[in-house]
Image (tube, rainbow, N blue to C red; front, top):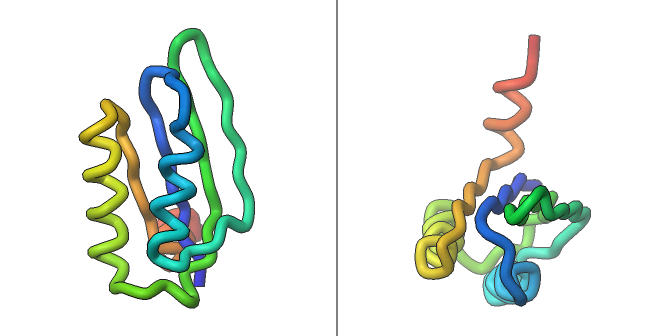
Length: 89
């Protein structure tokens, strides 16, 4: 199973490291990552493998959202089932 993580906020040092470390804390593996800085805004999309996640999805998502709140970032985690349903015609 996979999930999509988006991160948006003002650019600062260590954003990728913090989000990656939080994923590792829950045994979530990063499958793909893209990031860019647009003006002063940092934007990142990650595809992660949650098949070996050590907690439930809600706790993982909440943990990343809290990390974002503490660092002035908006972090959103979407399960691939929801993502696929939203983009199915």
